[in-house]
Length: 346
Image (cartoon, rainbow, N blue to C red; front, side, top):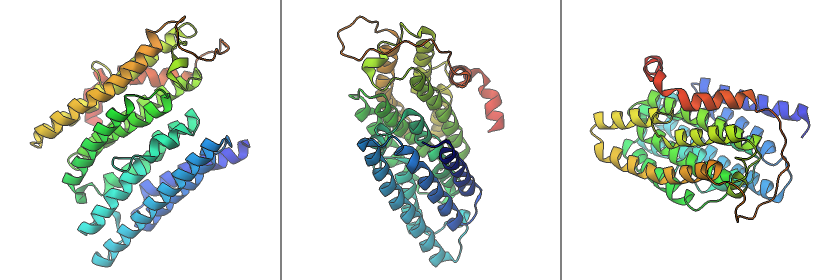
């Protein structure tokens, strides 16, 4: 892709995100989401592979449907209340439609089917954008309308997301699909707490984005798209493979790593809200996703060649690891002791 064109698309992504998160009017928020969608489409389809074109088409159709629903819900609310302000969402029908629309944009169950397919058709760097940056504007809308959302609906969607994200990720062999189901599972944790503690949901999103960025950039630097090629990385980059294992365990939410912090705080908040059964169910369902994180970690560090798996040999290039990967991975592993300071900021 032409560097100038790529720069324009990246700037448009920043612009769309900024417009959405800083707007008070529904039409401005909708316009920002549309700019975002149109800017990411060329980045998805830049390889000209049929699967990339298919992914871009699926992404466009789903996002267009979700944007239409957001516009419809805001118009219904304006019809009922005479208000276009995002924080003045009081019509129950509008709340229901908006929750469904943002769930579709994020990839929350039961609107999650498009996300693994789209991620599988893109490169790892575009997949990173789809998993983190493209989820920020819808999460910001959830944050701004959190007081008006239906808690029962969100708890059901959250438990569904965590269950489906865990179950459907168990038999995957493609790293991008595994990370897509991991994203669906993490969104469940954010959705269950957004009504009760919106700031905690945003903290969860930031830490999830941090850990996912570390995993995506590590996989990109070792050029790994399948589990069979991940098995050969230890002999080439042992330090990076070890860091990848710890980052994956952090994503799984194991103490004493960073990923334990949001899960711990969310379970604590749910028990304060007298929702101990929901907290127990979502904690048990996260064990499903723990299995495929352990599988990835096992393939990255414990399975050493020669072995019987068929894979294509890769050239070993002794290039230095990107400093950004090192910083993100370090933060993904070591932020838990700083949790008192993080909590004072939140």
